[in-house]
Image (cartoon, rainbow, N blue to C red):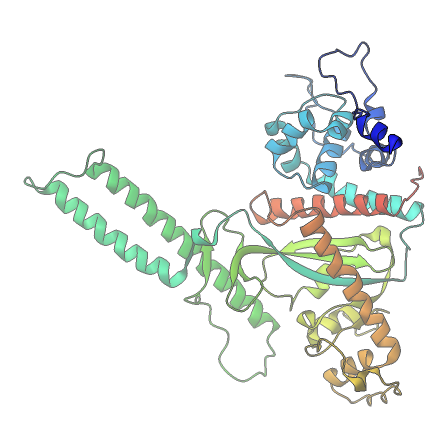
Length: 457
């Protein structure tokens, strides 16, 4: 009883928090960041990257420039930790101890950060390849004879779908605007016309509608150009002996144009009835290391024609590809043949594994039972029969499952853990640059998670 009373009477002890006593000596910021922190790994990695392709002011005029290596490291670390806005990146140079260490307590402003990001495509592309070289040197990435899983994900554009107009709607709006212009001109000529509301003038309203008419005309012209290019491509790929009329060159009534980011497209997002203004971000993932070895951005709403160009985006440093895993959205006989055979009809040594139909979720009791592999189709068998057999064998099923375990979780990490769900930049060229930065940041984050020990060249 006496011991319990003494325990209850002892005062609580707290850590002393003193914000008033100044530090007598400037601390080493490295001591303020844990030794296994991502920023230490990133600083070591960036030191090994060649940044000579960075765009800098060679004349030496104006204010002092921030070192390209520091700016590159700042962008990579920010994207790897979910900070994408140039203003938020600038604020992090004050708020984050890790970023203060990275920047050596300097503070580039948001205009400098944004300009560096926009103008250094060559630096970022080179950095993506060089990080894969780092991964190969520390034996995380196998080089040559690799298996890649390819997939695409919709990433929101920096534009609202409500800022878009269809070809048909643009024509209707043009007619309405022309009618309103005629009414305003008639009002201007009428001596007894009623005055407009306070702050509005006939001249101002006319100018506003003329601007809108010009925008609508530009939108319809852009959609007509797209439709013509689409028809030309379809006609070029069309079999000359194929019956039926050629593809029309006129736009479809539902074709869309976005005034904020004309390069973006309306795409299905999570269902047949839900659409968003987006880009299609593609990635090719090496299945053993789960590193992204190829990446690109396209404007297509589906993946039917994306297999070959995405495979071509694989960095040469990764070596030759021997196997490609894709879902049914990429499958077409022309696409698979273009990958597995060269222009002379010779085999390239690449094998494509893909289902030819929708895969049923869950397994029945019959699926659990051991069974022999089905017989191979005859050489005269159809494309569908040959592709189906590849994933029907026990070995094929094991290999194809790697796709679900690699590329799909990586998109989940990018969107959930890194928080990248919307592009900050606009236009296909700049969006492609930003996706390079995102995948570069993911790869360094992945190497750090694996505990890779970087080795100099």
